[in-house]
Length: 328
Ligand code: BTN
Image 1 (cartoon, protein in one colour):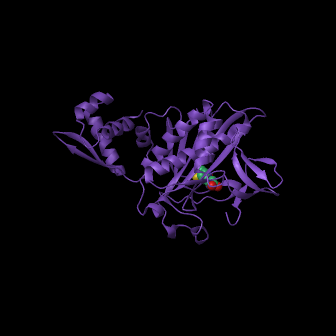
Image 2 (image 1 turned 45 degrees about the horizontal axis):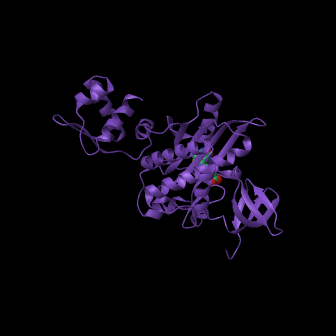
Image 3 (image 1 turned 30 degrees about the vertical axis):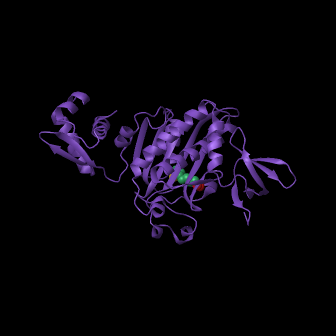
């Protein structure tokens, strides 16, 4: 961990209390002058750190920005996801950045955040609105020992982890719309774009790209999205701490990734089904040119949706656009 990450970790662990300069300098193995210089730098970024000659340093407030060291300091217990975090002020798409890192051989678990994306993308070639400082736009690199068909398990795990973190952090009750939309009160508030690089029988790497509309106001959504999209701020009626939420999501993702890698996908799928508005409903799924109608029954062992058609056949669907049948 960097000095800043260690420093923020020490200050956060002290809660409302202070940590003395001597203690920090011993713990971080740097001079008291070096601690002071780092505190000054963090203050310049907007961290409100009180310094008292007798009691030491106290963290009073953190700014609304994504800071890699601060996120690392909040994630000391994750095993894979979030052990390496990089933050960009602006990028094309965080999925593109991860793709480059994957080709450079970077270890799995690295997370790339951007305060804004100029070419954020969603599923099916759609654009993803990513204004600066308003949301969480980030991607995670994974290198699971999987067959390509099992990759859907990761999207399911990501949606479950995201829903759990959002619920714990905001008290809202998000629902999952298959395959990967997070809805609150029927409106989309987050989405997941999973991209895969694979050989015929083996995954090389997977990129999980998550977009969460956190602090956008209604006016900040383009008119055509206002009816179908929402943000956590709109739903809770107050601004949401993005860094706290980001850390909570990464913790839950790490936990569910571990569950999937241990072969416990069934437990994740059960939780996903309990949060999913699609299961148990009559739906129509458009997969390219094909239109499949039926009742969504459950997920199979790979995370694909099983659809019972009018003729009683079970169709296995891994992607497409879902519409709920009217009257449901
Ligand atoms: C969807 O619902 O269609 C998926 C949206 C995924 C958006 C995220 S934002 C971070 C990452 N980078 C991208 O360009 N897209 C994903």
